Each structure stands twice: as C-alpha cells, then as structure tokens.
Length: 222
Image (tube, rainbow, N blue to C red; front, side):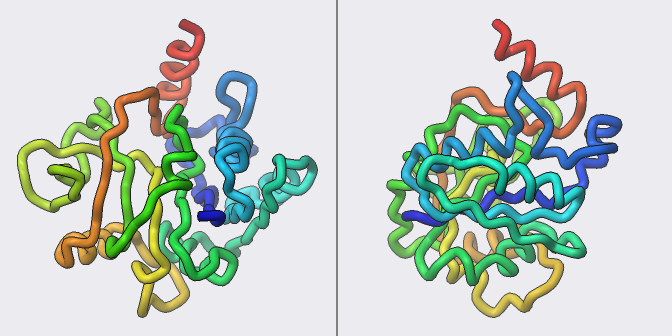
C-alpha cells in the first residue's frame, strides 16, 4: 500500500479562536502541526503518494505541503472550493489514490499509532478497516461495536472511530461527486459484513476544542 489521504478540509469551528486565522490541522502540538506529524509518519511508514484535501485557509495547507520535503513521499493538495464532507472529499480525490486500498487519516487527530500497521494491512474482502479507541469523555456512546475484529452496528461494548483507517475504492462505488457523509457508507458495509476493525489503547486525541488541545499538551509534557 503506497497511497494515503489526510482529511484537512474542515473549518474547525469548535476550535475557535485558534482557527480564526488557520485551519485546524495546522495547529501545533508539541511544537509541530498535526498535518506535518501525519505526513512525516506516513512517509516514514512507507507511503509514497500522500493526498491532502483542503478548503478552509487552503493556501496555508498548500504552502506547508509544498515548501518542504517529506522524505520520499510525494504530497499533493486537492483544494475543495466548497467542503465536501468526508466521503465526498475522498471521492473527489480518488483519481489520485490509485485502484488499491489506501490509508485515511483525519487531519485533526493526534495518535501515537504506528502507521506501518496501516501500510501492511490486507483488507481481503473487506471494504474498510477502522482503528477504534475507547470512548473519550466527549463521545461516551461510541460509534460501533467491535467483536472479534468485526465492526457491528448493535451491541453493548461500543467504541469510537479514531479517524485512522484503510479503505477500498470499492467502498465509494456509485457515489456521485459532491457533498457526501461517510457514516452511511460504513453502515452499508456493516450490513454486508465487510467492515473490520482493531482497538488501539495508546495515546489518542480528537483535538477538537482548545480544552482538548490543552489536555493533550499536558499529557505530552508529563
């Protein structure tokens, strides 16, 4: 697996005032932006073709991606004039992601998850594989049930999607260009028994608010 996409088009309204002048993926954690951390991690893991979608303050993301070298990786920015949501952004970038499964990384999460695990993953017949984490305080109900490596819609032990995954282009078959949410596609994959997952218990944060950013910085300082 050589291709990956970093989702960096969101406006980050809950992160204001920090996002009044910059996109959320360019907020720094431990002296380095989330976006740079993701690109460096993907490049070190062996991903050679990395796509970044951008919309809000897109020119800043273009500058970061084009002003420096990230190992042997080629970084391409796809600018969305209007944000297309998660699935819509991926569909818009599909021509750059090849015909094989690719990694998907949310640009506003921090994780010490080793991207090499995504790079080595074999989906087999699955449409996607999601990295899950224990439910954080701000999302106590979780997203899916994880049982023996399979993701289900119903059950007791729900966990939260970490914003890290591997997806097959087949997941987006029949989706027209435009604004499209990801969750309905994942729900359909569940009904087909083609959605797998794994639980990650390491450091992870959805850096969605200034308070969560401060909490993450405190953890990193310990």
